[in-house]
Amino acid sequence: MKPFLGDSKTYKINMLRKLFSIAILFMLVIVAKAQVRKYSNEFLNIGVGARSLGMANANVASVNDVSSGYWNPAGLLGMKNDLQVSLMHAEYFAGIAKYDYASFAVQLDTTSAMGLSLIRFGVDNIPNTTELIDGNGNINYDRITSFSAADYGFLFSYAKKTNVEGLHFGTNAKVIHRLVGGFAKAWGFGLDAGLQYKRGFWNYGLMAKDITSTFNAWSFNLSDRMKEVFMLTSNQIPDNSLEITLPKLILGASRKINIKNNYYIQPELNCDFTFDGKRNVLLKSNLVSIDPKLGAEFGFYDFAFFRAGIGNFQKYSNENGVQSFAFQPNMGIGIKIKKISIDYALTDIGDKSVALYSNVFSLRYDINKQKR
Image 1 (cartoon, rainbow, N blue to C red):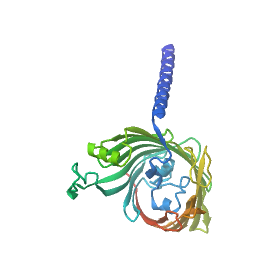
Image 2: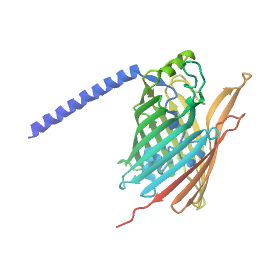
Image 3: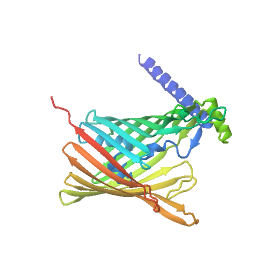
Image 4: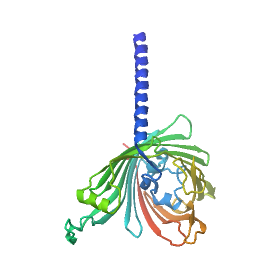
């Protein structure tokens, strides 16, 4: 039986190698025919949870609650409760765009945890005037309809402790659905991977977003009248296509500093590394662009919290061509009453000439299983 078992193992290894080679070849063919976008699936880069937004999204090293499914799935193992549920709502551009988030996470045992996150970013009730004028040139306002343009993200998270003390690993499988009324839609799939390492008061985090690249398959359903409008307005009629989101790497480090017995401050520095060409960030090149973020949380009796952060460092030119430097300031507060945590964040787009603030609220509820 041993020789047969050995032959069976060899056969399986060879089969796995062949399947892996076929998968790589298939991916290369897809990449060759797909469109690589510098800014793709950007709604997944806004951030979730008022705690994190108040700290300018500097969060991958210290996050340890249900929102870890978004920021760094390895952080799910830091939850202090058996189950956690979180909700968030935010509005952007004077309430035109709505951003909603809901998540759930559960500790499976002492070494593993899992979670589910749902994200929607959309603009609703957009007037559709493409059919306003009929084929005879008559205007009929009854032909005006409305539609929604919305992006959906579904994240399935799993975290596991490793054999190295203080080192946790996590992964996300995410499904993307993007919808523009009945005219266009896309389905996509991708994977994230994260690590957290805790040593003393220090926390280190690594998040690899879209580690396999995320692929969105777009399909379009345009009427003949809409195609005619595209042509008359010198716009290109879109074709079914494949859109690729390239990987992004986020590195972070934080340290919890205790002040007396009931006070602490926890600063964190994150750096986003992108490899899709030069971006308008603080450190940029054709090979890699680096976008740093700095945030901090001050805690009092594990009851009240104050947060602040800065990020989104950019250079821009005004109407006279003079270059200026801008950044995005964030701040927030939070309270925790028994099992309920309520957080608030105030964010600005970082334009010094026009302050456009967004108010973000999030709620978290902690649940402990009943012991039998």
